[in-house]
Length: 140
Image (cartoon, rainbow, N blue to C red; front, side, top):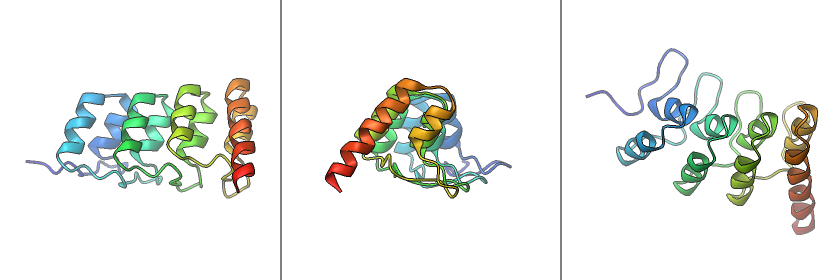
């Protein structure tokens, strides 16, 4: 039997592929069999990065509930929240914020999730993220 954490040529595990494709039942099975939430692709992305980028809100929430790091960074310094912002995945943004994602984090070049949302013409996502930034600043 093949390991649940085996990687393909791109460093993708079955969990990463299932998160990207939105295969919730398969993810439940993989997690039950010991899939590694922290495993990364060759670009440093986790299953949560892929769920966030593809707007799979229920999967993102499940991965967070199982212990996925909401502020994990890929090779370019992107967090799952930033990827959800780039693609305007508002419900996923909210799930990540609810799970503890920090909207104030910046990439290596200084870009925040709110800036990504603005730059990609996602005004609702930008507003949601700016509100979360203000709330975090008030608690800092």
